[in-house]
Image (cartoon, rainbow, N blue to C red; front, side):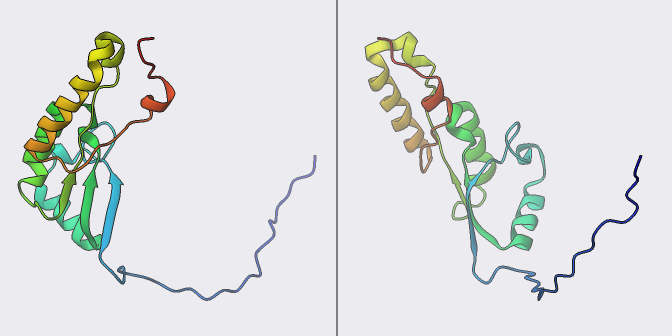
Length: 139
């Protein structure tokens, strides 16, 4: 049995450029603040989140957790958007699993949900992967 004691060592020499901060303000355009998809920031001090965003140079943050319905959306609007409205952008969405249950009434129901979310303060729509993978109309 042959044992390899030495591994090849790279001879590559390249210039290293450290970038301690971004040159321009960062927009985090796709992230999740809450559990189970994100960092659980809905249960941590808001000041800690702001400190980490400041340190990373993140000026604007898009949270996509509200796409499961109004409960999460309303919580995130209250926890994040209300405290820093220019910095946080919370997206809503619809429960696509209702399509089978509601049939032809689904489009009107979904439009109503989105209208309510918009009035509450959401700024966009998150369409989750199940829409393209598992959701079928009632036909």
